[in-house]
Length: 276
Ligand SMILES: NC(=O)c1ccc[n+]([C@@H]2O[C@H](COP(=O)([O-])OP(=O)(O)OC[C@H]3O[C@@H](n4cnc5c(N)ncnc54)[C@H](OP(=O)(O)O)[C@@H]3O)[C@@H](O)[C@H]2O)c1
Image (cartoon, rainbow, N blue to C red; front, side, top):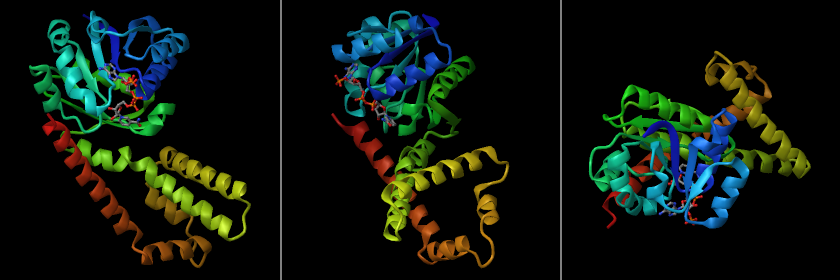
């Protein structure tokens, strides 16, 4: 087992994104192996990144220090059971990006309490701009902890949560979060069009505003609340708009929406753990 060797089980969208990020960060492509059943995807990954590919999960794990589980949640159980022997032999750190699959499920399917880091990325991870929540099982040592963080940082911001249950909260906030911002963008764009802007102007002005606001929020030492107050002059246009949003119950509505998403994340996790 070599700590530097990373094997990806599943070579789809998220694996490609992580691999792209790792290579951009200076990882040697020859230390990365992808196991993927689809030969077209294997050839595409090898051609694009120069990584090693194979069709056999067990062969891919030989010598791996880290295995990143990048398959769909629906096949997680089968894949974990298939690789159990190789995991027992090679003892890699397992990093799961599979939505809704708990550390306990992975350990039960593998058959012993392996070191697992459970992560919850979001779609912008595909362009290395993700927000990724991470949780480590008690078996993860400090070197593995750092290794997992370095790998996941290749596709965005990585934040550890103290309790695995908080992964469901992160799923509701950042996992589903891009859709909330897209919805807001859609509504702003439509309002601009309805009030007379050319569709292309409405779209670009909205998107650039979202990007600019996010960049200000991330680069500023002030919280969003202060940034909002600073653009809200008394008696001005922003104040008018915000008072309409407030009357409509914007903040409690968002709170309810995120609560509902978290509840659904909990239910999906339970269903995936119980499925035969
Ligand atoms: N996309 C996101 O934004 C996002 C966000 C958070 C979490 N995730 C999680 O990321 C994981 C991967 O998502 P994705 O969007 O990358 O899915 P994807 O593009 O479908 O990738 C999964 C890959 O796994 C391959 N595969 C299927 N069975 C396999 C097996 N037995 N052994 C090895 N590989 C196998 C699939 O090949 P075939 O296509 O040939 O079946 C496919 O190429 C999911 O668990 C998802 O919950 C994704």
